[in-house]
Image (cartoon, helix red, strand yellow):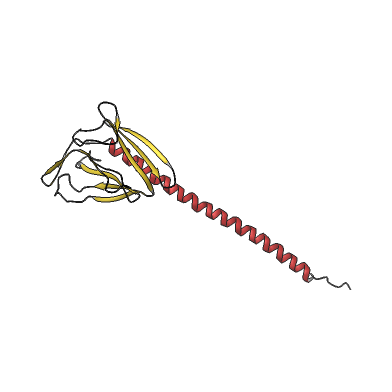
Length: 190
């Protein structure tokens, strides 16, 4: 009768070591794939929010309404540029926009950079009490710079706009994000 041959202790240790190395390599590969997936999802969300912001700004700027507003006893121009609150902020742009749908009223809206995010301002009514604050909606996070320039009737660009000058012929926007991306876009106004 033949005696059955069994594995030696060294053969078992070698097999376990090889299995451990293969498991470690598989775990590192899976970890790398999961990290890449998270990074891609974060970037995709960032680009989607940037695209939505650009589309909203383009739509709003091309739908202006020549209707001044009253804040208490003071009449404000239909197109208004306010100075920045701090050195890190941008000027605030306020204007009256056409209705989005039939039956909707004109809307007073605005854009500003505040604390590293671009905010969308919406007033409940065109004419209101002097200190009625707008509703504020954050549109885009991690913004370093949001500059606007305006094309005047003389076809010259200027970073300032007189509230008494009516509508500019165009608006140029320069946006810079904290992660180093820079965007420039020009909008023709009707």
